[in-house]
Length: 566
Image (spheres, rainbow, N blue to C red):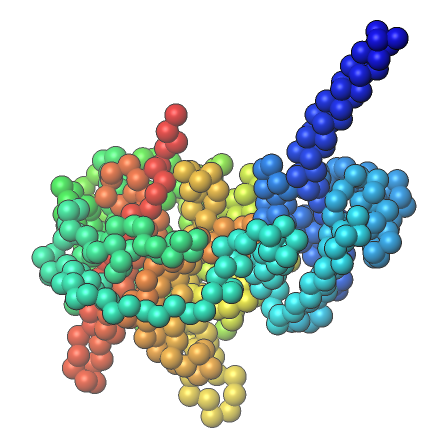
């Protein structure tokens, strides 16, 4: 009898221990909440199906947290939706059914509706257990570009209200504006690049602005991260800037253009020195410049897009070093030239012949060197009004494929799909060029009909982050583009990367007085790392007022080496 009692007691104790251990395991497992993210329904006249994947990816990264929140894979969600015959708009009952099948704790579903310029997001977060009421989220905006911000806010709301996890986004939204402390006076803090360095005629590698004055500001941290350099001031306008080895010595030169000539500089021994100056004829008015060795002879050609003095027709040319001098290998060309730096094929030449009287028109071609001339080959599919000076190619979507990105004629940036349509468009204007084509009068009594060209766009491969960045200038127009003339008072440069829905900001430079007519990215100082280099117009000058123009060259160190480090 005692033996039986001992055995029963042993079994009871074992059961208690097993139950206890099982309870611990269940408790640990229960700590990890499983979320099923159902594909959002997209209501739009346009094909915006790409947003569905983008929303899923964004929410996955923002909601998942190791050891706390697990996002169920898209493949499992799709399989569960098929097995439950869930199609079209998902309601709360269907969401619960799908969540139960997936053994999920929560199910998030919703819709994105685009009507004209208005965008709305409507979503629900369902607690499968029923212990918490269904959480709803609704927001709207007047542009598609704000979707990223709205998704961020929705994710922050869920993390806060469901999981008790306050994110940086939520904290910033809740926090009252902090009082700004009065900064102590420092001699090395400057609001304007002109005052950063003395006028010594070169960019000194050891001379740099204070980190909190003129460096690159991270969008994530708000902190300044890059070194800043400035050249001496020049008593002329710089219309364009490009980088390349134009004399075949293995070193990068900085090629600039003024309205009436080409000036080449090189950074040597920490000094930015003029190498040569090549004047243009009286029949040319220089508007844009690019550099690339397209004919593959070891000397990068200098492609100059220029007008006649009246700015009524193109009169472009190409320079090349012959071992002694820079000579014209093409002259009197009616082509707009632009070089695109692609990750797979390197630098390629693009060309466009605009229709007479129309600056924003004409087929854009990739051009090759054949029989002593540049000839069009494959055409680049773009919207009808795209001007080549505001277009480039690159891995914009981080998909290992070339994608075109360009300015519209209203200075909004758009990403172009393979068929030539608009995949995405920025909600605000960027660029802002002073270069214009004087089109024929189209109204009785009209004095002028300026058709402004767009600015350059750059797609830069950030090898350190293994992603592409779109870099754009933003010149602030005093007239807000509403008048026939432009007056730019301040400027800055911004960087963006594709996140599946649109271009998210990475960093920007501090705002500077004046405006930027052109910029480029490359190893201008031959130190093995890429820099952002730009021309900055400090003063335009006026013949009537007897005032001289004033411009300078500025540069920012970027973080990615030219070659990957293994």
